[in-house]
Figure 1 (cartoon, rainbow, N blue to C red):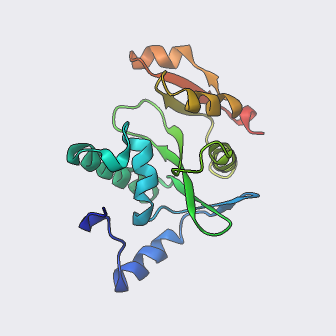
Figure 2 (cartoon, rainbow, N blue to C red; figure 1 turned 135 degrees about the vertical axis):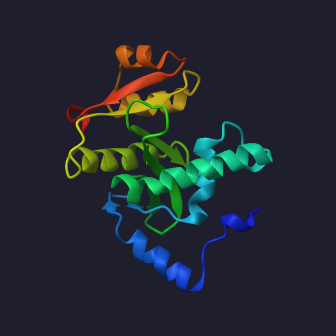
Length: 189
């Protein structure tokens, strides 16, 4: 069920939203097109942001996910970098590359999510590789980290396939039960 605040804009507001979205770099891969996030992409991001099934999430969890989604999207005008939604060749949103510097995090985080039903097709790896190459190349990032819950074995596998390595010093700084995988320009392949 779409809540009223999750509905895409219409009329002049939709035109203005498209103008802004056109400022976000578009990145093409063999199977994907990374573009600016839109409101109707929220379910993909909710899947990344809510630990449980987003459709079954309570109102508080969904509200928190909505606020996080808005923060993630707001990174573009505030920081000059942000997240992308990954579309397949037919124009269907199939995933996201999440780039953000959340409150309390010591470093910029690189994350990924895939839409329900397209897991295991390499979408997260393909999209994240392309975004990461852009971030290290055109954007000049020297390093990025992925904060991963130790029970999230799928994300750990993606991080390792991307060539990211565990960073024990960064984990000690967090003083938390989160794994930190470090990406560097040398891991771009």
